[in-house]
Image 1 (cartoon, helix red, strand yellow):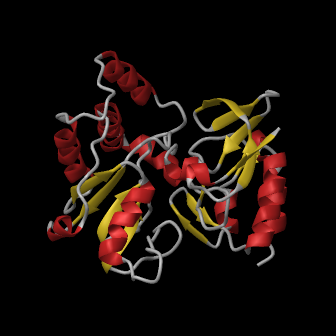
Image 2 (cartoon, rainbow, N blue to C red):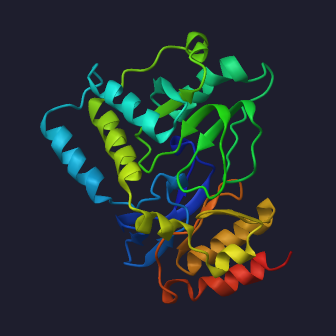
Amino acid sequence: MMHFMGRQNDLPPYTMPLVVRAREYHVYDREGKRYIDFFQNHGRAILGHRPDGIVRAMKSTASRGLLADYPSVYPGRLEKIVEQLLPGYRIVRLYDSRRYAVEALRQVFGPDDAPLVIADPALADIATGRTVAFWRPFLADVEVNAEVLIPILPFPGNFICEMVCAKDPAVTDQLPPSDTISPLVIDLMVKTIGDLLSMEEKQRKRFFRKTYLHALMRRTCGPYCVASLDGAAYRKFHAASLEAGVLLPPTQDAPIIVPPEFTEGEVARFLPIAEEFLGKR
């Protein structure tokens, strides 16, 4: 059975299985069919759907009752570790959702008669300077030097808050105040960044391996790939891939994210489909 997703998740409408279980880079539907995940919740599940560190941290922090959206010491801890992850940037705001973050940034960077454009380095090279851009882990040979960054952290779930990081502290004066965020959520963000910073080189290399799929793509940066398809062709590609057990992003405007590990058997039915759609260039 397929589920129709839409605005409640701030995602374009699309169909995907009704998921009853997820582990590492696989999701399972009610009939027990397994899908390998090339979507990874827009990159938030790039370390898998059930990373051990997150599960342990969630139990530990929740057991102390730190759930309510009350002020805590965790924003300070998050700020310190972000300075290690993104040298030259500092947290200027934490917002409840991406919608609130975009609305706040639009007041500073967006034209009055147009939506705010957030550049994605996984999709295209971005200009240096007065730019708002996403930051993603494991981008190969890509320097993201925008004035403001919105990190897409490997945090499997949309209940994470949005972090706005800037080079110039003066940006702070132009933005609405931060929302008060649950200590549980902020602590999980700290743990997630800690996992990235402590990752051994051998683990990192898994995200940079080249596959046959990379050769078919218009653009690749580490595990991120961009297909050269229009909307109609991509929808057909998405539907055929889903039938073959591969979950792709909802639209061609989001990067396909190649999992760091999978077997040839898992993609055996998918590769001819990829060749059919992506080889016509």
